[in-house]
Length: 175
Image (cartoon, rainbow, N blue to C red):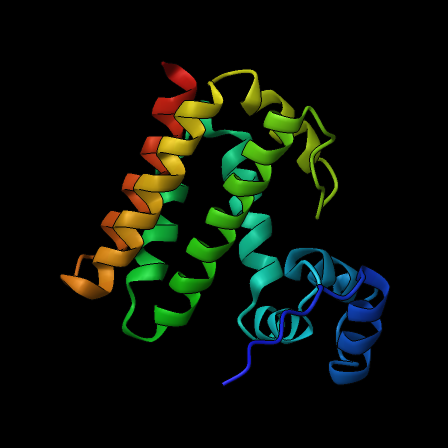
């Protein structure tokens, strides 16, 4: 077989594609999905169908307050992700979180402005980068990946994984 490496599409192209395929989206949602999808129109549509923007917004709110997590909100999120019909939502949330951690570490390593999908997100990234080292954030990313892999491999409880991941984030900023 032949491998064909393709470059990501630019944000405008993905936005236009999403607007054509999902005309019911509110103004600005297609562009936000395009930013989240990082050049992949298929991924943008999957995120649209999975409620990715709402999950991402909720995730950013929790990250903004990670040094004083709202335990009730965290448990509510964990409960939603543990439902039998929430396997795809859990996978989407963990994918978004992992992607966000990678972008944050890259921004910190290169001294670049953080990639902002939603308003106020760059301030969250900058604040968290100042609270823990890149090594600590990389460790959180690695732990998240291991936990997500173990959900399917050894049937871990999805709620417990959500709790453990956000507690790892909280520990990183408190250490």
